[in-house]
Length: 123
Image (cartoon, one colour):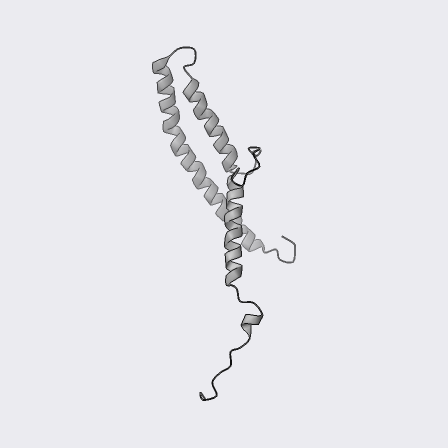
């Protein structure tokens, strides 16, 4: 975005909305990982053996990947997959682009703003 079209208030609204979406995603992730990690640990304890922590480590890896995907405060390195859904930022960017494109389609152009001729019968 160049300096001429930069709108600090619009940027603040966008950034605040993105953070809220990321916080919701992070909370949802936590809500899923808490029981998943407890169940995985319980399975490992009941099974025992050399790989008792196998399921628990899988949950940890899933949590690490989802943390990188959410990238709550922009400090995580990307997952490394060149894909449109490789991060929540890319997904939100696509949604934002679609909304802006749709909004611009609905905007009247200069040609559309010419006044319509009025009936001479109405005075």
